[in-house]
Figure 1 (cartoon, rainbow, N blue to C red):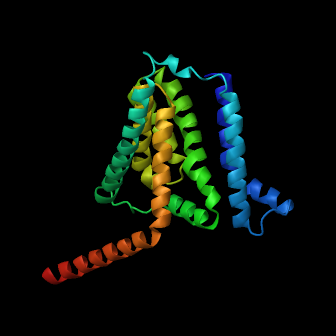
Figure 2 (spheres, helix red, strand yellow):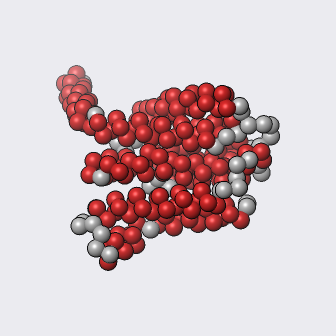
Figure 3 (cartoon, one colour):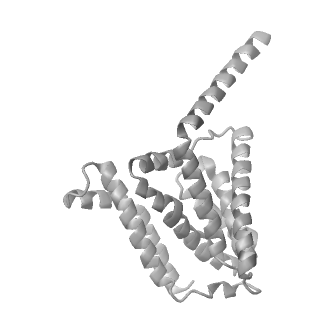
Length: 244
């Protein structure tokens, strides 16, 4: 692995582990009135700073995709695959979510997404991190570096499996490993298909942005629908008990 890739991974790890220290630092500097405010401000600051640092390390990586066999897709084809990738990511996410719920009985809710939505409602600027900077960093770390390095040494399935599993676990929701893993495979496919990291970045950013907007704008409608579904399930249980 290239030396600057290690610097990028270390930067990302420090970013992920810096929350508590950031809150304490902003408290000493008297920035923000509550820990929630300090966490929001630190999230915006730390992600932006890490993004700039990582871009600096990648300043000579314009043609890194040449390590794959074949030429990168043309600009037109890349744009087409970026758009297709957005809808493919939505489809795969929905399919994986249905399998989790109907086959494995996993709760469809995501505490991670809910925390993000709550934070965005209080501090809208956090959406810049969750919808744009965060997905870009994840594609650089998990697809460009981790998957890319493994793919040149193994094959697509092994590289996508390992990188997607790590990608899933680092989201802190092991019950949704299938959901995050399926997304990882999708973005890895787009990367290999076009040999341009900007394609899965576009798909990832677009998908996250759509999810956050839906969860934020239509939150009350979604909660009402979920309550109605729970009521219907309870009624089915009651009726089923009478029919036994």
